Length: 246
Ligand SMILES: [Zn+2]
Image 1 (tube, rainbow, N blue to C red):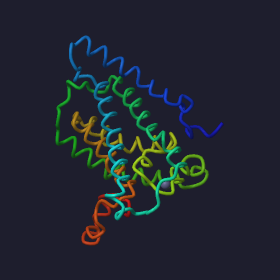
Image 2: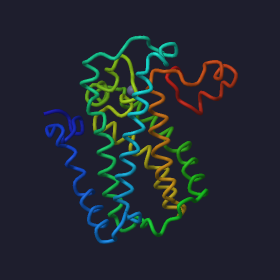
Image 3: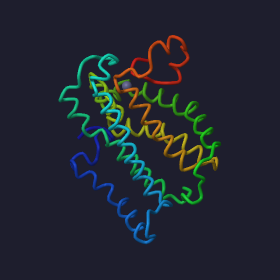
Image 4: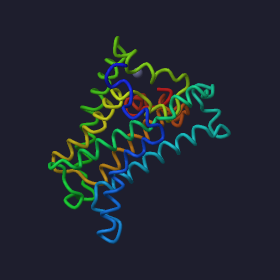
């Protein structure tokens, strides 16, 4: 048996792991039947919509990065992805499953506000989230990532993530439960802060999570989307945005 949190508890389920979404789907189906229409006030529905949009974000970046007729000249590492890596990263969505399940636990907590209590949009919440992202998530994740590169954590928890010779968008989500938990904390801190300040909104949940996924997929895509000339002209840009070559 490996170290705790070094392997996914549902690894043995294979494709049946998607049964884990069953309780959420059942709750949405029940609310849909009772309300006679889409239960837009149900966090379960929003969690499932977010799951679909997150999967689509990863899939679209994956497709884009593999359009060699379009991206060949801007690839950072010219090599292709081999079958070993494709097999290893096949279960990249374990992190998304874990975050959806943690989200389901959070929404059932009595302190979590109902959708009907929230605004669709609240600029204060976006400001709090941005501040926390810069002041807490970025330095916190950087520190935790450094710790993961030290012995014995690296060999137990982080070496797999760096075993991919050529990164691709799916590599961004590929890892052990422990490193996925670290990333989840970095993602959740700005949202938690905005909600605790009473400025959370539905659009903030969607926007923050999808922007996080989008930027990570871009960083791992192995395709330089932003020209190196832009970084030469504006050196501070490299502190604001993470791309495959910076
Ligand atoms: Zn690392």
